[in-house]
Length: 340
Ligand code: TRP
Image (cartoon, rainbow, N blue to C red; front, side):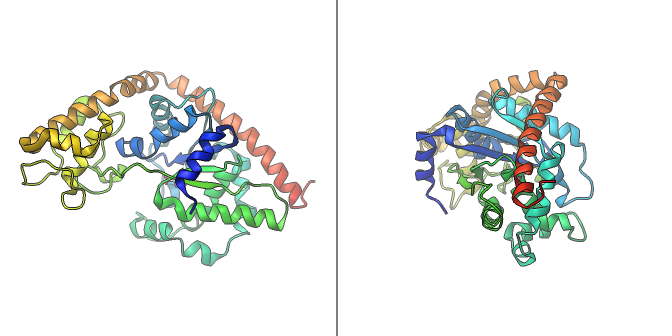
């Protein structure tokens, strides 16, 4: 692994030398965990001058289920989420990988560069197989990390902000880039992973915040819905509020959420509440979340009311991604002796 501080320094020194590719599966609305875990970081890096490609990974939805439900709604929702948090579409490329044929075509040569043993031992894939909704394991489940390499390498991204679970995929991408360059010609950068330094936000039940667990607060949730979800959140019997993630994870998580929204140290937030108990804690969290996300939610509502604009921004992103992918595929075919 690279040193994250060193990488941050290199990015700050020369942002224009970096291109980021990052993305999400369109399986539902993005939530507060996404915001503090990665979305805020994407916006920060874009504002620092790094070029940003935001992928809506629609084909990847089919890794663990037979059918991708309400795809168009989720895809446009992801676009709206990104615009609402401040991704600037005039410089970022927001696109869906199904709309970029040349990206998908890279999957073929890339598959030839990895062994079946490498695919089978990927711990994130193993975990997803365990939790899959399907009775059997599809070929896509096993090979999607190679498709993800195509997502990243088609635009020659050299920086990929990821959570820990994505590191095995990142290694496959680096392996594919290195092997292609050695076997054929030096076409690809070997991209670096940028691990988020943000603490992990749990859901309202104290487990990992996740769209599928029903424990998430969506960016798009209303203030009432936010209050309802947080009022129901799990706490414990100790009236004295403290920030102790080790021993009191549910309470600590609510304290952390308030602290992130207030941009304060969680220990100070907890100290302010002190003996006020869970009720005072929840009141603080609800107010903090609703206040912090109010402008984001207002912007999101404006975009959500204008699906034509969302379609247009996505169409422009798709067109740009296609142009980039066509160029890369041409280089790949030339390197492989297929210039005909
Ligand atoms: N696997 C990522 C997720 O489940 C989504 C994704 C697809 C992605 N392609 C990517 C992330 C390329 C980073 C880079 O959230």
